[in-house]
Amino acid sequence: MQYGKQFQQLVAREEILVCPGVHDPLTARAADMVGFDALYMTGFGTSLAKTGLPDAGLVTMTEMVENGHNIQNTASVPVVCDADNGYGNATNVVRTVREYAHTGVGAIHIEDQTAPKRCGHASGREVISVEEATGKYRAAADERDRLDSDMQIIGRTDARGAHDGSLDDAIERANAYVDAGADIAFVEGPTDAEEVERVAEEVDAPLLYNCVGISPRLEPTELEELGYDIVIYPTAAPMAAIHSSLTHLKALDEAGRDGISEAQRAFEDETFADLPIESDLEETAMGRFFEFAGFPEIYRQEDRYLPEEEADKYENSEGVDITE
Image (cartoon, rainbow, N blue to C red):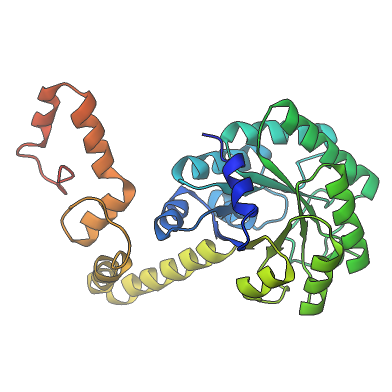
């Protein structure tokens, strides 16, 4: 399924589109279950999850595209994917757009940083010339159109926080990138509310805001009033995963079996308390875990498509019963 058209419709709504950051299919499944209308594949989170390394240009295009494909294949809503700086010059961007378009994701953003790039809220960033950058966005839009894809191209500029950068330069670049073919503008790293407002006033395009790092933590309603169309929270799932992992692992280290048992009880009693559960697996931590992973659907597929005698394997066998 291609999600570009659905993403366009969401952006065109009057209310702002809120996209939590996810870094793998597991966190995408969780965000999808909560009920968000779109998700954001964070580059920083992808780098940590796939390689254990920071967002410093160390992840390849194929690794990012693979993660985007797996996340979009898991989610039932459009995914916005980080495509870094396109992984090279304009000719590299052509392949990047082609590969992402084949995954069916709703949108990608391409930034104007030099290589190797780094997190948009880390110091030491540099940007390429406006001429080279606009060539990348022309290439991205042309390839997207050649493929007859509805995937949206988001033009991101890091000029505000780059070496000797300025907000004036960032605003000029954002408008130039939209003129070159980008569908949505993304000015990374405004440092206060006044700068956020200036971007909204002076950039003539649908706008994405990155609520993280050095930028002010404005409410979605505030951003909507200013004229922003999308807000992303890239660290939402990664930070939650780090916090939960450290909390539960410390409990295991300090209290052994009792520590992990307490974590399992919390998982069983609290995690899915107000979320939709479609099947009736046993209400234990492992039952809920299997349910979240999708085992009931595997059983339904087996029941529908495999020979009847295959059902015999569920008789007199040990384990969590996935047939309920």
